[in-house]
Image (tube, rainbow, N blue to C red):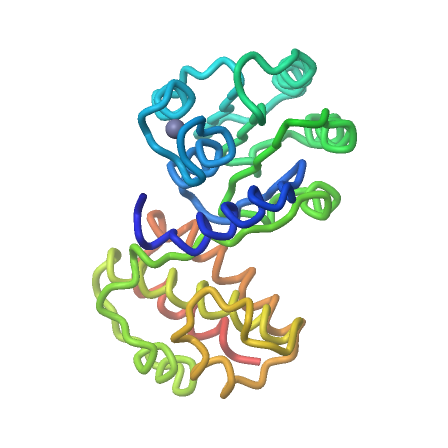
Length: 262
Ligand SMILES: [Zn+2]
């Protein structure tokens, strides 16, 4: 188990222990391995977490488990035919697992028709199954789909190298950035996304209990964006992050500065 995602794993351990696993989840981020770990956790025959040794764990890791279906589209759209296939899969009886799992990676790639058909799937998902949607572009997804899923934000800890929270706060206050290489910029934007997610959670719950980055407390308590401004900034950041491989680094830096101007 990777340490950086331990909080999410622990959260699912708690839910599982108390029989509070939801029928559908949306994971905002890009980490299929973490999602598979969670599916192992709810199905492991040997451990309250997961052992990586039992038949369920091994088959899930190898992605050959009969009760786990992964739709992993890279660039092409997810079509209505695929939705029909997954509906069939969900209606089979569980073969050897407690929770059958349907995992849809890059869930923003649903066509409009497929999205609408999939809504019905979400409403009628059978018991003892989990539907897990994964994407880092929720801005491209149907809000009615998102609203039916419990949301889990995957933190960008693995990329949190080289930027202290002081660097981030400094940028937000002064809106000055001078970055030449794409990799550092990508890490920096990922850090900003992480902070803004915490800011929004803080504005909604007016508590720091749900923060993903405990260290972001010092930043978010000094920001004074309204909730809608915060959400707009987060949407812009997600868009910049998704496009970062295809835009000029200077242009991306300028977009970043504009994003924080209100
Ligand atoms: Zn196991």
